[in-house]
Amino acid sequence: MSGETNLVAILSKMKPVLHEESYVFVSVPESFQIDLTVVHGTFKEKEGITLILKKENADKLHLNYDYIASCITLMVHSSLQSVGLTAAVSNALAEKQISCNVVAAYYHDHIFIDKLDAKKAMDVLLKLTHTTKLKL
Image 1 (cartoon, rainbow, N blue to C red):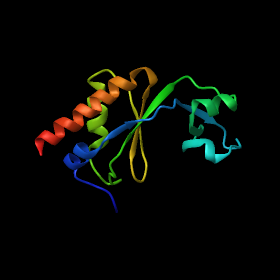
Image 2 (image 1 turned 135 degrees about the vertical axis):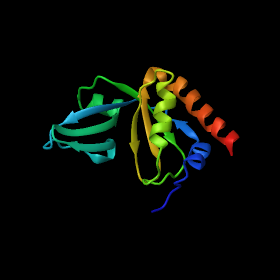
Image 3 (image 1 turned 90 degrees about the vertical axis):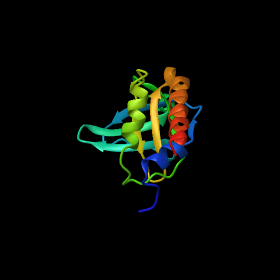
């Protein structure tokens, strides 16, 4: 499997990038038809299909949501078999009372946080990266 597995290396190289767009999570039935090019992510659950979309696309489709998020991508290719990244990131954010929803994709991890906490979350993640670099 490709990607970095050493947690210290991942944290020291993660380079968080804040996307400017707003994202929302919606749930739709399996029968829902959508152009997948406007979908940022999906997950199938018993209750329905969760879609992660840019807010503007959800609005155009008249989809209901109750959470507006920012997305921070960790620009390090972490292995899907690495241990501790989600815990390290979520714990650092939790210490500052910032909720997060982590989506692990093949190359990168994506952290969805409340839009109002975006700058604060970036500060936390940059500090985590810097602190980890000092340990090397």
